[in-house]
Length: 423
Image (tube, rainbow, N blue to C red; front, side, top):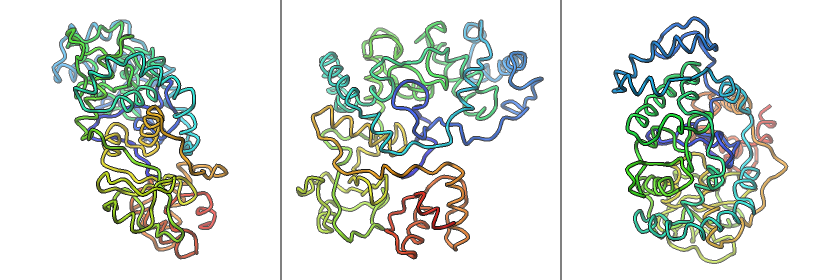
């Protein structure tokens, strides 16, 4: 399974922010960021890092940078009136777990019976709205509703933290100051546009907002005024603009109407696992010739070229993924998130649960263990591209080569068993 920290073009969503399907390696996860510095964004020294006085000084110096980005004094003053240093935001940032939840635990929660039941209720309740959104953007309603369900539990957990306060606190704190300052400037542009008043401008601790948890840069790039009331309102109880904005995002990311994100498949005995990975695309006829079948044994449907993805290695479920997988990936680049959105949308459509078992006795490696895995593979003569804790293509190739050498199934899965062998 690949691990990502950013999505494409800075258009990111945060899974650790609100009450959706949390505790996956999120695009906005900061647990592996650099330690805080006594130097704020742009090299500005502040009197005291992590204090209300220090934040006030940072805001005074930030004003000129906001002006340079086109923010007026009136907007700036409205947005920062009454703002405080939010210690809770920093605590949430600092206390993210070093453990990545295994995909089966993530999917258990993300595609729970309750989430499916509530999603089907949402489809019925908003049928006419979803008809219009689907007709406008060509993104199936079940996919849009699946994003809604994962990001905010169908609007129940949109976040109640003042966005400007959260982003200013994080930008000043410095762990990812440049990123959060950019989001803060975009948030000020949203206020200046008149789409939301500062008192109603709330979201998660990391600045993700509304029914489908757009961060400010995503909002500016993709949000739409679907109900034509003059505002792109993703915050209110009416989900029209938020759901339409999600469909617009996916459509601009290349969504193809009528095509699946992927299908669960069964692999034959003796399958060559070097053929797996989302960079290895083949026509469906080639996969069929290699003995790959749908999980229920039927022949593969032809939805264009596809790749084989094994998010838990040879002992877990296998998926043949297609073009629409990558459209969802633009929304959030973590494999488990994309599978969760795709599978939840299938379940909302009446599809079956995942058939394969998962290696539930395993646990995911911690960040430090992934680094150790890379270091030990390098000592064994394999090129991982460095020990950064990210399982990318070079580490996958190194893992497969090592597994093949010691007689393990060469699936490239970074398991505790492989690490123990290396030790």
